[in-house]
Image (cartoon, rainbow over all chains, first blue to last red; front, top):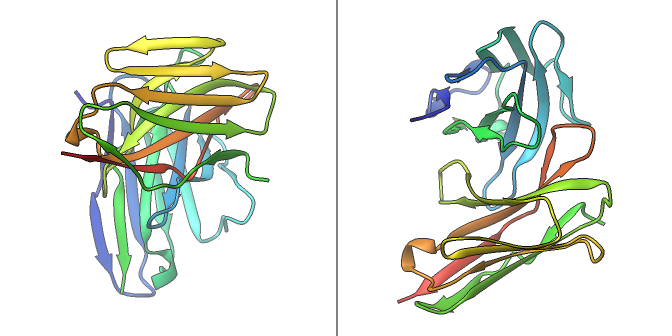
Length: 116
Length: 111
């Protein structure tokens, strides 16, 4: 079964609205989760590392005030795209790091965001 | 120079033949290497991972790693139309859990 649950799978919203995406670790407690973004025909780009109980670590070029990350529990991280604009339209994917080192990351099913 | 480089393709291979996908990386401190398959509109799914130099086989898939040349490859034997997808090479850096992805190679298996 799925190890990581990500919702919603698809969002269509108007420009200027905020969108929240949830990522849940179903099989184990995850102190670290990752958020990736993928534009069409491009690879996954890491946006930020979500740390349970502390502030997220953002990659260079990613606006922390626009992409709000909350990791309030060991099984849930949320990404909120604030005041979304058409250029934010992308495929957003979360991943969860398992307890054992060198193990594979588990990916959520992804969220396709379309901003009109 | 990109950290992880792949030929974007498309790579076309006849059904039943061997598909060979290549990836080079720049960080010598990289410790783990992953191959993911991604269908259009879907999340990546793990195909193989490899840590040590040499070959690792799993069914129709063989991963090859050469750390001296900073090169990792994926061979798919007896290619099937269902293997048609984008294959992403990813590298895990020593000391952290961040995966860096290549741009992916689009593979098409021709029936």
